[in-house]
Length: 130
Image (cartoon, rainbow, N blue to C red; front, side, top):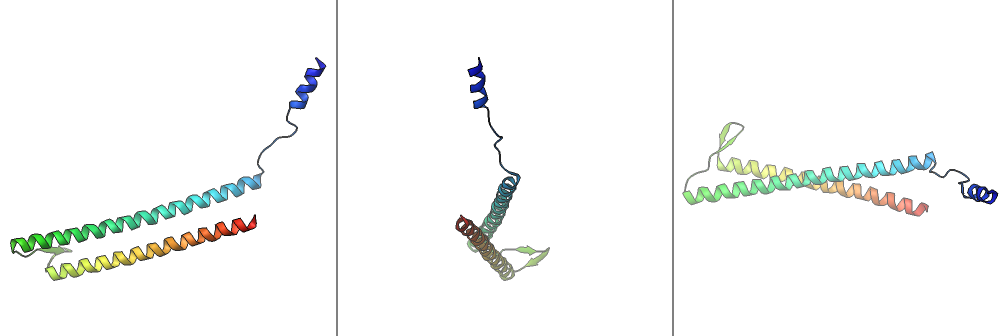
């Protein structure tokens, strides 16, 4: 019976094993930072996709209206802010909108590249610390 108690005592953990509070804080900081980076990346990607869809839709709308109008031999009627506009004015507005969307998409691409560069620098810095 004494040997059994001795073996039982030897098999008990000698100390508690767990992560220190500082390690838990470091892990939490890294995971929350990564979640924010991923969320930001998804947000910019969604905005870029929406702009692409809007651009494609506008191009299809104006190309479709132009071909329908030319096939019927009639003029397309466009209203902008409640006012009747000519085809040339509508085309100018559409081109300006497309130019603004392209500028926005370039800005989004630059922002994504800057964020990716920050992530790469952070990863390189962490790998050099080891």
